[in-house]
Image (cartoon, rainbow, N blue to C red; front, side, top):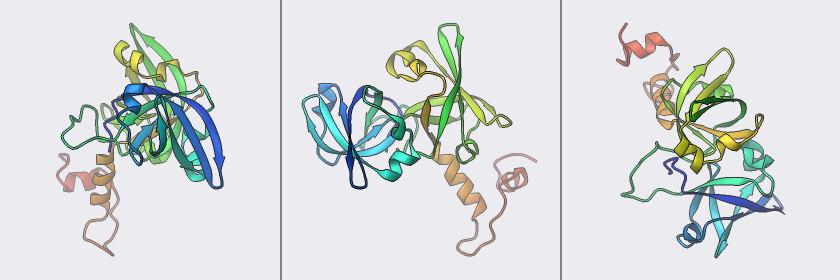
Length: 222
């Protein structure tokens, strides 16, 4: 499990083919690599991957062909700056939101607009992610925990705002329009949907998740 608070940015150095995937070699700050052990989980642009080797200022992870196809990692090339976060330890502060490192889908950066010293970024989102996006809710974009600023259901897009501090820590504002990003919706929304639409156990009727269902469950007034 992760928090979506990026520890460091690394650099993709190599992509080496495997029989059913690839090995990614990532340059990273020595302080972060010094804390790694074989088998550790590291979120790389939001995708949870396992450390297979490391030394000084680099480490490797293996990614399956499916992972490369279903995430934005398949479009990453050497030189790409990667958001890195080690798995949360028991007792650590949860400063962002609960991030599993399981990418739900990918989107594209469709617009950038300055907001004073901040910048607003608008992304497309596939239906399997968009259904869980709500104004002022949480979303992980390339592993970064961010607050959803607006949602445009008709256009299939949503926006977030990066304050100057965040712009200095993550690379999202530096990406060109059209860049593909990994998206992970807030897991709480997924559990709420599951509980409300599969009440009554195995074989129970799957109820539609609509305003009437939410009202009956006490989540909103009629």
